[in-house]
Length: 236
Image (cartoon, rainbow, N blue to C red; front, side):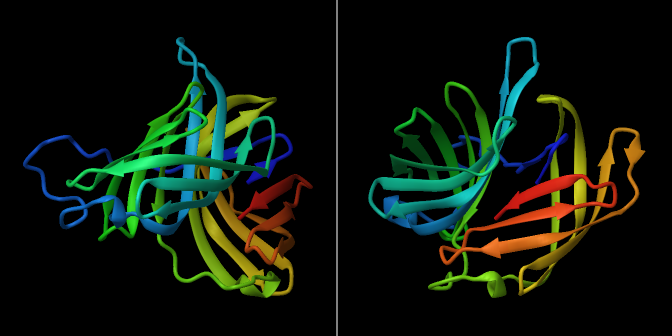
C-alpha cells in the first residue's frame, strides 16, 4: 500500500532452520526436487542497508514461483520500491532440494534464496540476498486459481496485518504495524478500516474508500483515499 507521501513496506518474518544433522525433518519426511512442484503464491520483502546501517531502499513483492519438480523455477511478481509501485518482474533460475527439506534457489539475476520446506512440500519459508538486497518471505500452494478472474472474484471482507517501514521524502523515517479489514463488494468498490501503531503512538482507526479492478489473469489494483484526501495504491 503506497501513499503519495508515505509508503508502508510489509515484512514477512521467516524462521531460519538450524543446520543440525539430527534435526526433525522440516517437511515431515525425506524431500527431493520433486517435493517442490507447481505454482506457489509468493510474497517477500527486502531491504538495502549500507555499512553505517542506513536504509537505502526497501522492496515488497507479491507474485508466484513455479517449480517444475526437477530443477527449474520461474518467478513472476509485481514489486514496489521507494522509486516505483507495481513494477512487473519475471526471472528464471534453478533449484536443488536436500533430503532434510531445505533447498537453495539460484536466480539468473544473481539472487540466491534459502528455503525451508514444510507441510509435505505445500509451503516454504524464504531468506536470501543479492548484490543490493537481503530478502525474507514465504510461499504456499494456493487453492486452485480460477481459469479467469474479474472484479466479482474479490467479494467479502478480508482481514490483514503487516509490519513495515514509513517512508517520507524517499527515505525510511520509521517503522509501523498495521492491522484492519478490507471489504470488496464484487463490483469494483472497496473500503478499508485500518489501525496503525508506531513507536510511542497508536493512530486512531482510519477509514479508506476507493475502487479496484481485477484482470482476467487474476492480478488486481486498487486506489483508495482517506478523510484527509491522502491517496493510496494497492496491488494484489
